[in-house]
Length: 246
Image (cartoon, rainbow, N blue to C red; front, side, top):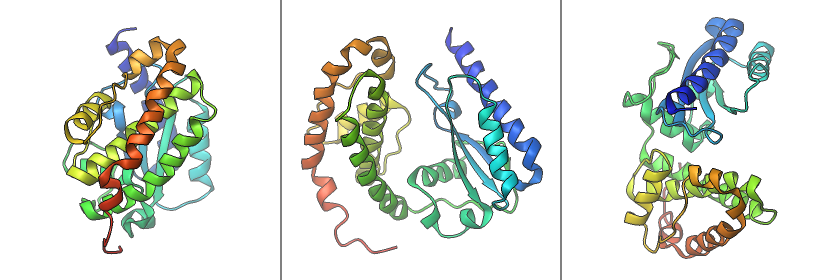
């Protein structure tokens, strides 16, 4: 399957998901935006997920039934990840939003992302770097603990999740240190080597990992060494001291 066929397959799955949701909730769907690798047309077969941001008028049985129906109709091996809010949540305090949503809002405001649906009632604002950084650091700890647990019972099937956790941690550090937003794994690792002191890890890209599952055990020591580097990285220790509370 060539790249055009791969992209067509993902786009067909996403379109079907959107149409299933819209057919049930109708005008109660106020915002629908594809994010992540599909929005960038940067799909990796057998690796990439479809990520979607949704905002509904409010929460009711129909909303959750619609999500369940649309997700269950996907019979492919492509995972659909949903981040969704009620209208009040989305327009209220940034407390309700995770760092991924903050970044999505920033990209919509800059016209990098084009929502399928966006109601005139939703007045998007670009979150301040301070707010996004604060929430990113909260997420950092949760992701780090998750990574450590995955490295205990580790095999080739687990490596994809380990790799994604490491990528997210690196993205958080780059954002908090330099304000950089990275797109894709190669850009993330290239910037890490350029800007993060002591980052000397040769992390293989997803295509290489998928082609060599028998080497997953050998790559584990790189991931463990990453943890040791991370434990001593100065930005993690010093950046958030004396920050104002939100």
